[in-house]
Length: 420
Ligand code: NDP
Image (cartoon, rainbow, N blue to C red; front, side, top):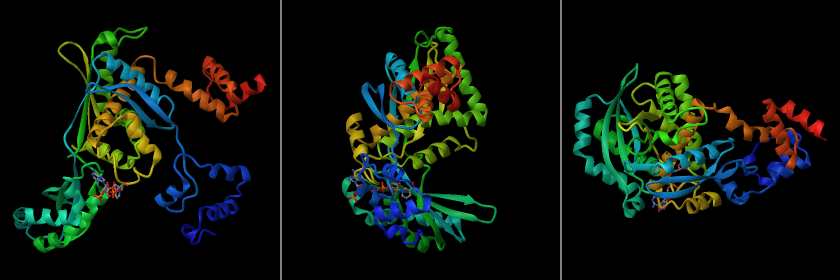
């Protein structure tokens, strides 16, 4: 039924799908609804394209990084993420805003060479021929060199499996505004014949590494306790509870995973809005976090000599403002304009800042009122809509559910029935 599906036009694909899944006209109309990304463009982006998938796009507000104010486009389906980011950013802005730095942007290409007999000699040979090899890599992608980027250095590593020792060569490349996956893959493939000739091995695996530890961004914030108090707790108590929550995540992988998920809530939302490859940023962030062999919380929270709460987050940020499908995605292009972000380095610092603000919001809520109160307000609205509430009814049904604390589909349906 799906034979040659990729060769069909979109409307032919929908006819086949209609028969296969028994779709109604109304369901077909959903698939035919064209959003900001034109079908024509989407059809060139992925295979077997049938429609486009939309998630809400909101603005994270109050963010101040290195003295610059940002309105941050965030694409996410999860309630509360944008509100939490905006409220934590407001708190941090009152304490002078976030400070962010970047380590520079070197991406990593990796070649695994098998069958090398003398590792020391091979390593020496690679070092001796480094200039020649960098020239070969650059010749494979001359436009990058012309723009001022290009291959910068070669590093040799040994990796041991249970079976054998692998001679691993890393190529560090400055990819400028691009994330660089395709650029680097082109370069390492071009390099391999010379690497094989010089080492006497076989380069079986050649692709970029998604652990981009040569392209990190760091965000920090310092918040005095007089800004942290809540209705029931002093600022000192909130501060100490946040630090204890961090210590718990540092000691327990179950908690660390959730701590980090909260950070990525913000980072993924920003980078999805910017049309970036979110999978690569996720892979990089989690690998970096476990780089010493133990999975840890991505951020750190401590108390400084003045008694202020200090947060710090360093993550690899292989972000891009060009390349991939960024230029052909109208909303990704708009995101850059709305956020007034000049380049990839600034985007990396903004994303990591959003991650830290998101983390503060989650920790503060968790150690004070609990996460559910804020989260459930929007969740109640989504539940009301799922149960069939319309217009003003949505708000009323959500409020009733929040009053009773019963936020679920059957309760929403019951309230709708009573109301009607
Ligand atoms: P591209 O292949 O699109 O290359 C970047 C493009 O941007 C080039 O065409 C380059 O032009 C252009 N460009 C314009 N201005 C600049 C500038 N200032 N700096 C740098 N480039 C500029 O993208 P990438 O190489 O970045 O690869 C990213 C894509 O690869 C993503 O879609 C990703 O999903 C995918 N990918 C990811 C993998 C992974 O993460 N493991 C694996 C494979 C693919 P010019 O050619 O003129 O230099």
